[in-house]
Image (tube, rainbow, N blue to C red; front, side):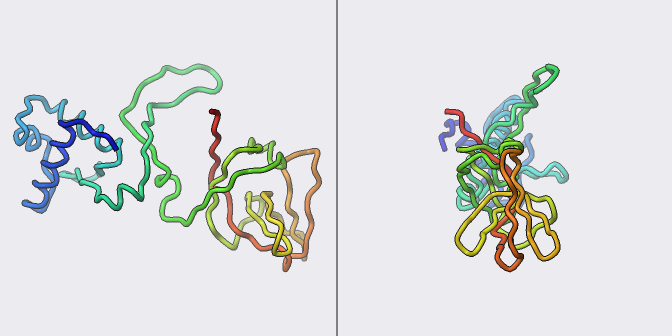
Length: 201
């Protein structure tokens, strides 16, 4: 990931300071160490490095700026700037925030895989052909959850999950389609949906 020369200097200073002292520097110590006159400038560089996934910050403890190890940086993946909230109804004031979001924050420590959706059986859930669903790998689910089900060991499908006696009802979210009923021993849950990604270009 590309960083500026000054950001590299900040990163190197943080790494060296932490290795020598055993704890991370304060903003004042970063400013003094790099010859910067403004704490706001230090804050800007730290925020930009945090948004790029190169630093971690904990708001509940002092001296909380930690350099993310290279292996963890790759695992975290690309961070996207989270610039605020957008109204889908009544317009709201647009305020830019210095935050970011990454898939790892949504996924956490769960084992997750992605599937490309084919068909429109879940269109009333706003999951349509060409979307990508993020699926947590699990063999159990609660009533009403959207799951990936394997029927008869061969046919995988994305549906809402319901138990009806000895049968499993796999319910599409499309009024033009009928549910699938199958004995419980013929249905294997492969995972449940955590979220959805859609690409427009």
